[in-house]
Amino acid sequence: MQPYEERLTAPRSWWFASVLVGVAMALIMLPFGTLPLLGGLVGGTAVAAVVTSAYGSVRIRVVAGSLVAGDARIPVSALGEAEVLTGEETRAWRSYKADPRAFMLLRAYIPTALRVPITDPDDPTPYAYLSTRHPQALAEALQAVRQSAP
Image (cartoon, rainbow, N blue to C red):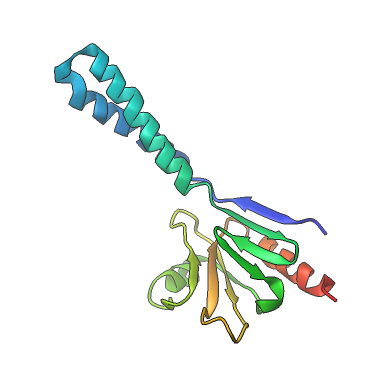
């Protein structure tokens, strides 16, 4: 069985926006001279790129009998049957169908997701909503781990 791993990187347009933040900082620093202008360009771009990278560095993995999504680690034995969400269903579970107690690894720039019920009676979290570019592959990896468990 191949382990599942996915990194939810930020879209290219966000990296372009990081450059625009740097340009804006450069324009703010323009009245102070050339050196501050360059400092604003480099510094603004660097700070915006770090923020973009941090937001886009979250990973989803199925490893060692657990679903690891961001900071959450959920044993596969505590998960129900995964539901692949696309289109309108994805938007519905992000908004009006969402339960405030649910674990949401939400990235609005990813149009597909997986909703997995959490069946552990001691856990008040009803389900995990995971934005993923490959919901079917993630569901299959969870099913494979569930079937291989003794």
